[in-house]
Length: 109
Image (cartoon, rainbow, N blue to C red; front, top):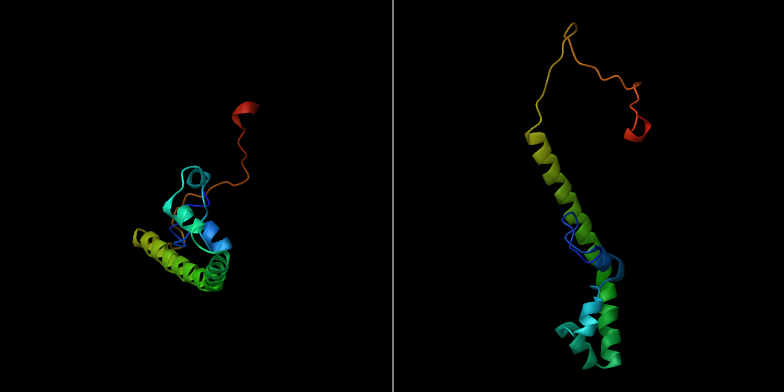
C-alpha cells in the first residue's frame, strides 16, 4: 500500500516520508538491479547520495502538494460538469429527508 504511486500526489507515501523508494523483501531475496548496485558503492558515496536524496525531499513534497492541488481541481471540474443547477421558488414542492428517523441494523431486527 505505501509503495504504490497515489494519483493525488503522483508519488508513493513511503517516498514522501523517507525520501527514497522502499526496498521490498523480495528484492533482498532475489536481488534487483537497485539492490545489486548498492554492493558496489562505497559507504561514503552511499552517504553522499542519501544526503542528496534527503535534501531533495522538501522539493518532492512541494511537487506532491502541487500535484494534489491540480488533482483536486480536476476532480472538482469533473463533478461540476454533471451538476445540475436548480432554482427553487417559494411554494415549490420539494422532497425533504427526515434525519430524525433511525434504522435498525440487521442484527437488531
